Length: 205
Image (cartoon, rainbow, N blue to C red; front, side, top):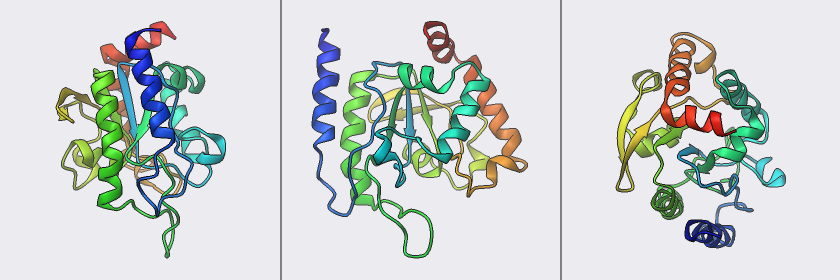
C-alpha cells in the first residue's frame, strides 16, 4: 500500500466516525475511496442515501448519472474512478415547510475540514460542484445562469484548480429542464467531456 493509499484509508476511517454536528443525522455518506484527479462535491445526502451507503443513490442520482453516461462514464465507472464528496456528509433532516434542511454555516465549516483533507490528499485537476450550495463554496453565485456552462479557474482550500459547476439534478428543480438552463447544462457537459482530466478517467475506466 502506498503512502497516499494509507492516508486515504486513515482519512476515511476518521470521517466515518465524525460526530461534530449533533443536529445532523448519520451515517456519514461518502463515495469510493479512490485517488482521483477529479473531485465531485454534492450538497448533502438525502434521507435515502444513508441506507444505501453512497451519495446520489436515489432519484437525483439517476438523472446525474444519465448526464455523465452521455459523455462517456456510466454510473459504476464513475463511482469507481471519481471521488465523490459533499459540502456536508450527513443527512441534515427535513425542513419544517418542505424539502431537506439547509446545513448551517457551522455544519458547513465542520465538514469543510474533511474537504480540506481531501483537497490536500487528492490535489484534483478538476472539481465538479453540483448544486448552488456546493458551487457557492468555490465561486460567488447569485444565479446558476451566471456560472453553469463555463470552465472556472478557482482556488479552493489553498489549491489552484479548475471547476465546472453543474445544477442539482433534483426532480423538484425545473432549472436544468427549461431554457436557458438546459442549454447551459449541455454546454457544461461538453466542456467536461473535452477536459483532459475527464478524458484520462474515461480511458482508464
